Image 1 (cartoon, helix red, strand yellow):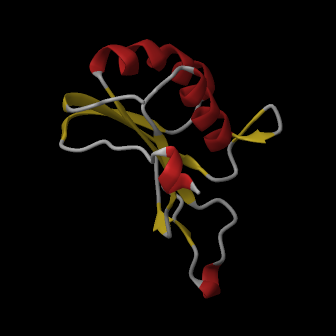
Image 2: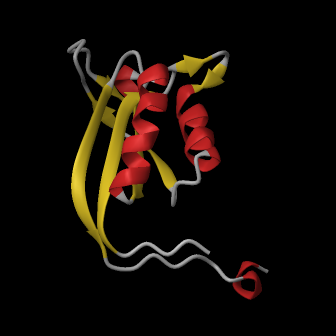
Length: 117
C-alpha cells in the first residue's frame, strides 16, 4: 500500500468532457496513464458550468444544454512523481489548462482487502 503524507504536489488538469485521445475520452486516458505511472491516485470531476480560453460558456442548465461540460482531473503525489508525469500530460493535453499546487497530505488511507468486500 502506498503511503503519502506531508508535502506533496497537486496537478489539476482542466479540459472539456468531449476531448478525446485516439477515440477514447481524454480524462480516461489521463487517469489510466497516472495509474500506470504508479501515482497515488487520480479523480475526475465534471463541472456544471464554466469557460476557458475560448470564452465560450458551457453549462448543464436545461435552456442551454452543452455537450462539452468542463472536466477537472486532480492528481496528488510527491513532487518527484508528479514532475516525472508532466511530460506524459504535455503529450496528451493540447488544449486546456494544467496547474500545479503545493499541498500537504494529512491522511491517505486505502481500503484494506477486508473493507473492499
